[in-house]
Image (cartoon, rainbow, N blue to C red; front, side):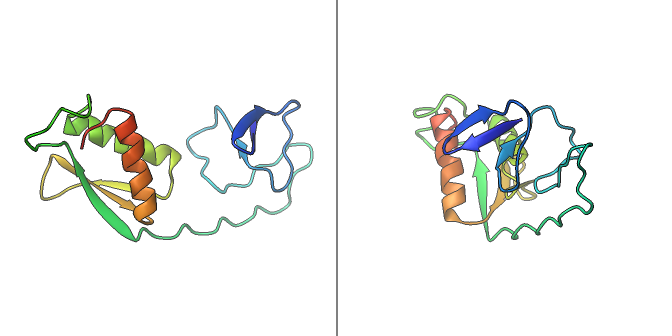
Amino acid sequence: LFANRGVSRVSLEPAVAYAGDIVTLAGIPETMKVGDTLTSTDNQVPNAIDTPPLAPPTLSCLFGANNGPLAGREGTIVASSRVRARLINETDNNVTLTVELCEADAEKTVVFGRGELQIGILVEQMRREGYEM
């Protein structure tokens, strides 16, 4: 169990969090989702808190490998399958993103997000990781 304190993550010893703490859990099952209520077995919460629904995506972008004349000059990861795998992996940490295969072009991937800033941050992260799209 880790707590977020400002921009750093610190281990909680003993593993106790309080109301309002933003925590990160390691080694949890896939059945747990963001917003689930966690409680101790000693002092259980009588009723789980309802998880508010996530706002639906408002923007979609089409991602694919760079196939222009300057392809391969800025990044080292240029295959569309690697770009798609990276986008799908992003949905594990970013629950507000949705990734789908493009029906019109098998080499492209459609990403649904909540706005230009979110998509822009994702593109910049991928660019810094060496992806070219």
